[in-house]
Length: 250
Image (cartoon, rainbow, N blue to C red; front, top):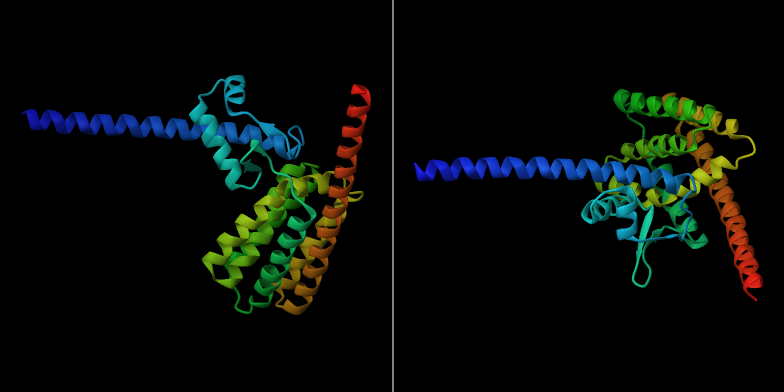
């Protein structure tokens, strides 16, 4: 009888802990979603330091929940942990951008050239990502546009049939999300981004892989150039703000 009671108690306790864990994770996901939106829209700018306790209190959640939310965004590359400053919004250097785009060129071009065997299911997924990307650009929803853009390019990597390379690629490009949102927001003609992706898909489905790779290479080089320009302008604006602040103090 006592053994049965212990078994029932252990089962109920385990179920209660599982429900608690699910609830905490879901709340952490919600908090991460709110912070992600603030980062990607520029409300929380690159380099901004984030204090765990004040943030948790302001959002009415526990410190553990806030810590989990920050961990999620750190894995996405949106937050960085610094030994001296704690957690801060990620800030890419020009060198970071050059290295990330080098990785993109190597892997994405290789993936396109490896797409010699038709994969109808993968092509359907790529088309779905393309259509969602087009809808987001037309709606000028840049956060969603970047999400679908990176998903489109991430799907190309599947042609390599290598899960480790897919994982490495996803981790690498996660750092670009914030910068790409800024680029798309400030693009003089955002509609020009749609035909490029549509052309990539059409050439891919037609098996014209060399042409597709050439257009993709040019697209990645243009994207890197735009991001570097936006970063330069952002650094100049930051420097001007610091100088203005110092002049007021003096």
